[in-house]
Image (tube, rainbow, N blue to C red; front, side, top):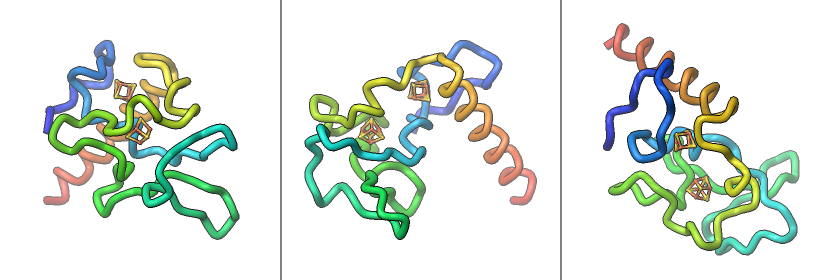
Length: 104
Ligand code: SF4
Ligand code: SF4
């Protein structure tokens, strides 16, 4: 797994742990994702499943990139590298990792 860069630096998918793929991805009617990769929340929302480590089950865990890139959901297509949400999710992730490292 690639070590993430500090949150203060410019984000690049090439050197990121695909942190955005830990977010809840709500599927849209136009999405065409294999059903075994999806689930329904108690609220009724149809979402991508997550694995036990918190990543979307469609992740290629060797390369830490999307394993269904050509058919990834619309919300994933709209996620902008180094945009505000990218920066925010990376910042949260680094804080969580730092806190976990202190407790170890
Ligand atoms: S969009 Fe941002 S959070 Fe997602 S993989 Fe790229 S750099 Fe990481
Ligand atoms: S579908 Fe692909 S891009 Fe979207 S969260 Fe899952 S692994 Fe990431």
